[in-house]
Length: 141
Length: 141
DNA sequence: TATATACTTGACTATTTTAGTCAGGTTTAT
DNA sequence: ATAAACCTGACTAAAATAGTCAAGTATATA
Image (tube, rainbow over all chains, first blue to last red; front, side, top):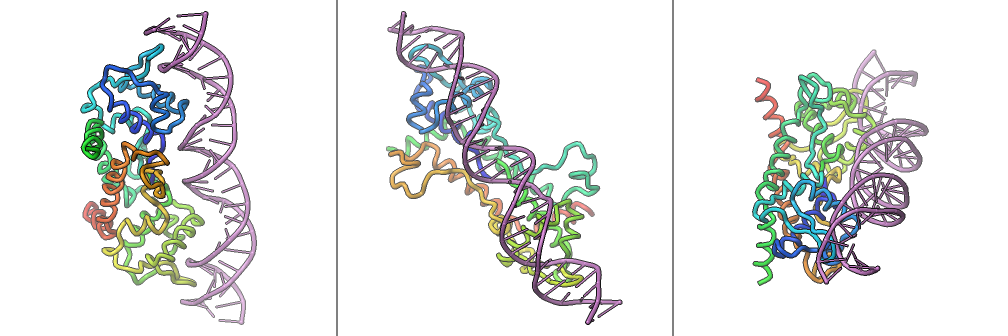
């Protein structure tokens, strides 16, 4: 089980963005340099973030991206969701009526995975971008 | 982020095993049929579980596998560990002295991932095979 | 002792996912 | 005008995954 780079990058980039006010746009080029993420890849990621209205784009020279909401209102859940980073534990088919994977009995561990998913998602729902930035500023002082 | 089949199968198979007493060995063939997991794949998985002394093998006719410890003492952590299912969130190189990935600053989200890893591992350390089987029997009654 | 059952091991492979790259745009501040 | 920066879609190398396949070895039981 591991987090993919896409999800990680998205959070890293947004944390970078959140450090600046919501007035001056930050260019992907800057984020790319600071965070060491390929510019082209960032563009793909931000395209998704924009579609989910997490960021707003500012075109042209001196353009870039700004947060579309307050950092406090952006939860990790929203970010992961936007870039299709999902917490998946079970493959049991939903359509089978009685149990999992066409078996007549519900698989022994079905509830376990559900529980695990909730446990993880819970963590993501609590954490906001603001939390991230705060933690870092505090640590820096 | 998703769990791989190897980890899932390992837990499913062991939960199946744990339902029987520790005296009569259960053949992989039976588990394969009951859980819908390829026999060959199960063999790979059990080879690892045996090396980590989670199960014991009984060869010959009527042979199979039995748990090597009490179900209570086998935590999910142990199982995942045995089959190399690891919770991985960060790729930051440990050897770099100051920060992550050769950057001079520690990456903004580093602590987040650590926290997440702990959160998940914590879940795995608490759950034992016994818990799983219990939950299921209770539900069945 | 013959034999079927079941463990044991290692090598191989198709498929999928990931983590990008590349090419060719469009928009707009200066 | 032009350079900076966003925007989009198609393509791809490499890695991981989820197995399969082949050739064993060990042993309970008839």
